[in-house]
Structure formats: structure tokens, C-alpha cells
Image (cartoon, rainbow, N blue to C red; front, side, top):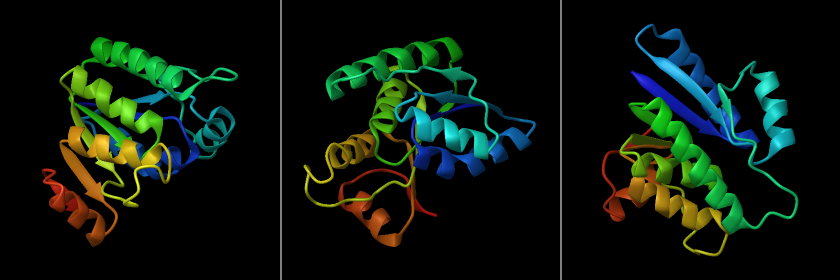
Length: 167
């Protein structure tokens, strides 16, 4: 089973590092780490601390980049990576643009999506911005949701999302 983990920020590395370690420990899995570079300095710092070497680095950030341009670059880059690798699963974490674009690119490439830290909600689509919208988009795309709390799972059930699991 080939699993692509997508990360671009410090929290994504911190929360996906144990998942990556477990996947790499298993002889029946091929874990491919894709870094987007959304928060380059903090990402690299955490990758070093957890001794994770990305297999692919999209290095998408540019000075003065608009969110729409970042999103387009992420979708384009992740879509190509997923088309080339043809994984069974894509794992994303949280509510960043990297997370939303990883899930959307996987959906476009017909790859199953697992979402770590699913179901968080503020109830205000503009706060935090753009994270609250990213959360709801990923919820619609994910095939498997790993919720940090019972309330997070209840949020997804209320939204009629499938396969919500509290971890």
C-alpha cells in the first residue's frame, strides 16, 4: 500500500511524524513524504527535529504571493505528484492551504483521503481565515476522518460526513 503524507507547516510535521514513522516501520507500506514548503523555515526546522527527509519538495512559496496563487500552485504541484505516484491513500492534517489542496488534488486524482485532526469548527467561516473554510472543504473530500475529540466527531456527523472516527 502506497501512502503519501502531505505537509507544509510546523504543526503538520509534528502531528504527522508518528504516522510517518509507523508507516515506514511496516513492511507492507510505502510511505512517500511530500513537503509543500508553505511555511519554509518552520517546516524545515521540524523536519530536522523529527529526522524526516521529504521524498518530494514542491517549494511553493514566493514573496508577496496571494492566497489564490498559492492554492493554484499547490493544486498543480500536488496533482502532478499524485498522478505520477498513484498512491492508495493521501494523509493530510489540520486546516492549512496545504491540507485543503492535498485533499482536493487527491480527490481529482481519485485517491482516498485520510484527514488527521478532522472536525474542528469555529462556526464562523471567516475566523480563522482561510482555515475554517479549508476544514469544511476537507471534510467533504475525506474518506476517513480522525477526530481529536468527541465534539469534532459530532460536528462531522451533524454535517453528514462519512466514516468519522474519534482518536
